[in-house]
Image (cartoon, rainbow, N blue to C red; front, side, top):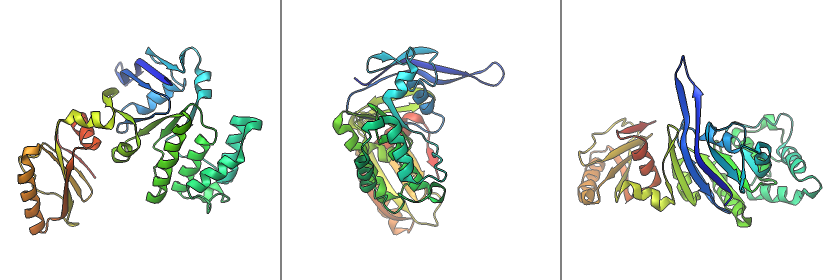
Length: 312
């Protein structure tokens, strides 16, 4: 076992005499060579938890052990075991990605630093066009990839990636997920901190959904999806000019993201759902539709809100 988090609680003072519970009795473990997803919206308590794993904050209650040693007793040891890509952009200044990644590699590995790994990472992520370009002239996606390489050029036993795909183009996102998976081949474990539920479902071995400081459920993607029972998902591509649509009474929950509308339903309602979707196409309100089993996104929405959730 790489990481063992037991009953971690962290409370911050709020306005006046109020208190903000950032983490509420959080417990989970991460095994060697495992990708563990920590899913939650902004303010759910993910970053606070990561900072405690790194020994930057001390829990008010509970314990965190890395490789069998308490982080509370050895916070500096935790930072030597972990490699981190923060959510915020890493300022490169006048350094090129190649210079920045090489510098971090030499700092972490010293004389054991192997520049061939840098070449391998840049090739795997197709970063050749940016490797010698000054950081201040790079796009957000290129800087994000450079920060990822800085985190994994000499990876610790536990790599923590906070929203690693932000601003990264779709093609290189696929390359990035492959490199992340390759990290685990030698036993390295990964914590993926994200609110991008769709991407996480494809990438993780196990996942925990965190909301308002609490872990609502955790397990394999299949186990987490099972928490919404045996539901089905209807996904519709709405007409561009359509901002809303009348939701049928058999819908258990709905979620709209731009022109995509997602509806969860009981399997017994599938015939009615298909007929309803066909009518929306005939009326010009819907361009196309698809039907599939529930996803982690459906579980996430149902667990974090018992009412309709709409995001744009």
